[in-house]
Length: 481
Image (tube, rainbow, N blue to C red; front, side, top):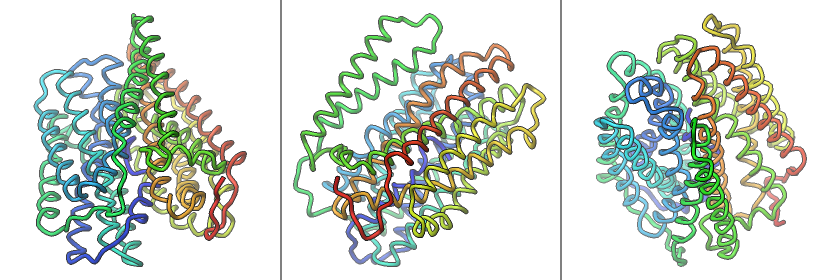
């Protein structure tokens, strides 16, 4: 898994897409799995490559953060626009363009001699992922119908979880055996195969019902606002940072964010991000839960491998394997929790799951210095976090779907997915305060303890959001306010 990986509500984007008969269903499924796998694997392998990049490029704490956030910022701010553009101009066209841009950017990253060049490549990768990710799901939704659609989406999600699980292992092996540049070259055969299959076998599709113009002002305003806020948060951790510049960037970013919120409310049904859905208390509650919970999880997924390699002496492969329980338990537990949530409602599982995640994050306080035991100190905490996520992921998806009427399922799902990635973006921006303490392993571990406490607090607030705001909505009932 990664901060950029599959959000549970991404799947509903495919469910909300109108289907037409597909002549090559197997090829369509293969193309979408391979294409979206680029984003899954690239995000997860970068986490285990950070220490090697730190040794070679010496980016400093803010530079380390930007190696993750340059990609995540572009993906977060442009995903909804990429999906809307696919509806207007053709989903296969945007899917292929996204793959092409992603592969070109991967070559730039692999050959980058300096930090600014690799950061430019990471931004381009994020833009490419924002084009191909939503349209891979839309192509699935357009190519399958009925029970076949559900099976195709389940296969796609399972493949994504597998890619997120094995990505750090493969990437860690490549980093240890060859070097960090090879993790970007790994994208080339996968992307070329996806592009050829899509070009040869997948039919073009678009939404004939779309009549409104794309919300380009909203997309630009949101992207600039997020960028300025992220710059301010990231640079704040840098020793000797210009305080006036930080405050100025943060103030302008917050002002543009407020303008973005106003604009999206004004556009109503035609908004890029349908904020009018927040008038629904249940949707508001699940949105807050998503933001807080994925901020806590996103920080952990980036920070833990870095600390294990830098402070505990793990190899990149070992650090990648340390996170395996998270995708495995989520994959195994989601089907069961989906059935349980159908019977007892989603509010209790979501609230309890978030509190379990909080307890797991607090357990990382037991992690010591260079003699830390993975089996006694790291694994138990990781298992508890994974268990908590497994408990609440499926109910979260169900709640988003049931809290709005059928006409807004796609919009609500896209909104929730963007919020999940935004939580990871904010958390990663704040990790600069941890990366700055690399002077000694003890200082890095101490800062990690603080980050674990903050994450536990965020997860606990996520649980409170579920208990206080979410009400259980039967599957056949819709809530309107």
